[in-house]
Image (tube, rainbow over the protein chains, first blue to last red):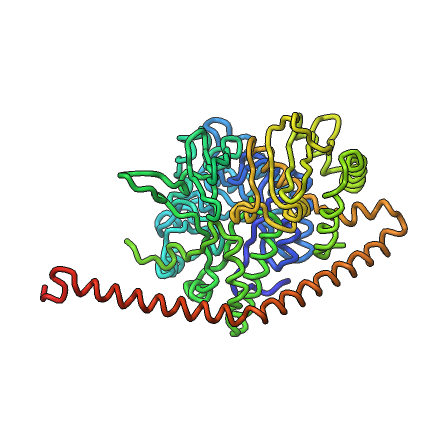
Length: 334
Length: 215
């Protein structure tokens, strides 16, 4: 049995190859989803069929690592079948936990698979003690993935108040801060991450080279225009550059990646159990680089050595827009 | 053959540049057949994406390639100017090979503007994810053609790759040693410029109406 990690490193896998890369790079836990709309990374060519999921779980368990299956979209009204089937399959295949957001599915999982460990997805947007206590008491949720809206101090207070494990995002793409409730993508494409599992789905994205500019469009609406030397970002509505009052700017959010390498000891001190790396849609090269960097950083801190600054700087190259932030963890605005 | 081999990619680029279309066509067919033999699951997933045609455009080669995806098979041919495709992906040959082998993350290439995609984004995202998940190793796949000689040939290529990387490192070290002074001088110039600008800003601030007056 592996000893309890200093901070549990929870890593993404969009393909079996990325899953293997996560295990080899030092993930304590890997999270992934089935190849359908039951998870919030329902992208073409991504995710696991039942056989691949079974193989991945077997691989992880051989290495004494854990597997979490994300079933974190909200079922269509009156048609919970595929979501319930995904929970059944996760239980049958021996997943260590399922990550759920919908109250109906939490209820179904608790009633049907009482031994299946339940984690509350960030998509549930539970960001205060009362909300988390409800999920804890009603459904026996053991861990909550906190929305990216809280400071480190607030995470500490919340963790002490709720008495269950907290998992926070440590690296990767940022969402506009209304997780599970963001419908921006729906207005332009008719689909959203909450229901269909894809924000700004590829089917509605177009890139056009117009002169020296790369123009990204979503559902026919111009989202951004990048000059030749400018780093690009995702074509999601929240990362769009729009003109308002005669000024063109990132109205909602800059294209930038979260990076918490500098504040890992503070997160540990706040009582956080697990660090989540975002990026099931990213390739295995991303998984290898980010996971091995965080593995080394966590191990170094646990041994009192400190972090590896050059490795941390190298992550900037794989960040959206080539920039990083500590996001709300160190926020100075109110 | 899991090591990162740059040399074969460069060699392929150099070899393909002067090759006439007639000579390249059978090589593409053979290459795809060798990949298909070792990765049948990859081919099945590619077939399921069809019917569709995608143009692959290595920016540093005079050739463009047409990837045809259909229920009855996957084809890789040279693209003609008349060919129509649902999407075009463009990048350096090395980047495209890295992407196919999953050695680099597609989003990273996109963020850094090393990859351009036009047309149907769905098929490009699907291709990217399917290739990334396939654990492709083109050198090993091509060398598998040599049967029992694949292993010694692989060792020879790895040795050549190692040699090429060492030469590159030496050249870079020599270049850095030659230009190190220039970088330091440039840093000093920039520091001096910043100091000047700060001084000018302070002067302008002091001339602002009301500046320095008690609130």
